[in-house]
Image (cartoon, rainbow, N blue to C red; front, side):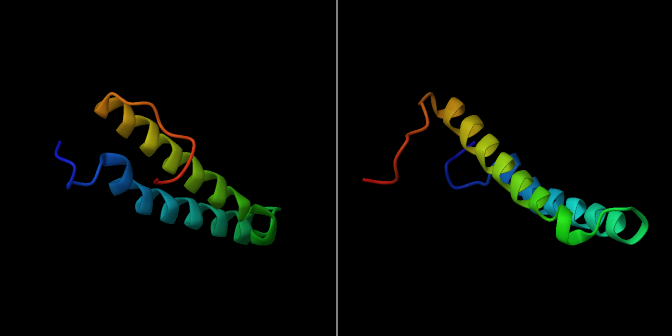
Length: 71
């Protein structure tokens, strides 16, 4: 894959977040938990997908993810 094309993880991130949002709203509507108690799941899911995208991308390139930002 060339560096200009998006990875699979970046392509599925949006749909996964939308599905999670829908599930959390359904739990709010039909379950015992309100959305105000479950929204942090979206942050955790987004962070996990970004971490996975970075790890998989760096393994393909044969490098270790850096700790800092661009230099």
